[in-house]
Image (tube, rainbow, N blue to C red):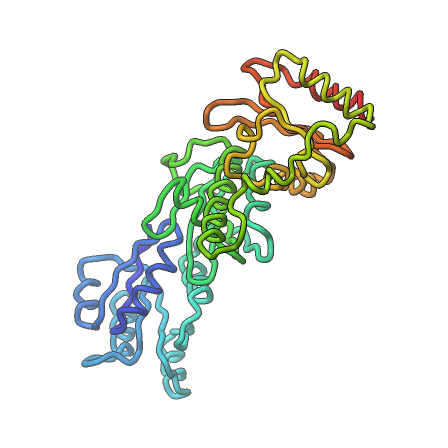
Length: 359
């Protein structure tokens, strides 16, 4: 654990910096608003890094820096201020303090400087890649790592162990609730640390199910927002109703008829649905089984993303839902099939059925 002290007479600056730094594991943050309190703290605590405002009331931060450099040479230092004139920069350099930032602060740049000074291992930074897509790659590669997520003023952490998501934190939230909040952020930067810093499992949900459930919850939030703003016909149910064209749509396709026959007669299939290549529903025995609160396209967007990551298209996916129902999702050039299976039902026959009909 690394101890960081922030000295600034602005409560907002202290709070903003603390929030940005707390998004990173292994950092303990101490805050104060004046030099005397900071000096007393140094007497009884080991401080690994000091961040101080230079223009403080009563005693300025430059004197605190000089005190720390003389008496606690192991402590790394960073100076901040609204205005740092050339003579002040020269003074800082003469004291061996080469890190300084002017306000308004870029929390991202300052946090990067903190991590570098404390030699906290970072494997890399990812920008411009959807978080869900990157997590799928982590899962495929069975990676163990900690991801630090930054989106504007939002900061969060996702813990991955052997490809599974085992924990998440943002603000006062932890576990599944925190993960859902982070997944809803736009334009996130991803900082990768090579080790998993979390030793206590907070999330015990299989990866694919976790991603599906998160998409469902975010979609429900979106539907509620659209409904509140008077955005017309409400909810996923209406969209599904519009898309459901019935089994007669493909009567002229012998492959479709044969596929429907095999799925309907298979004793291991509880319910099933068939979609065209655009994800529109052609037939379903029970829509609510598959799409309670979730749009059709979300179930297949993950398969498309995985196909791009692996370099070859995926023919089928299997998953388990929260009520322990088992599902198989199969794709061909013309159709998608989603089937709910009885426990213990093998998928080989169903997958081979699709391959025989549409090869």
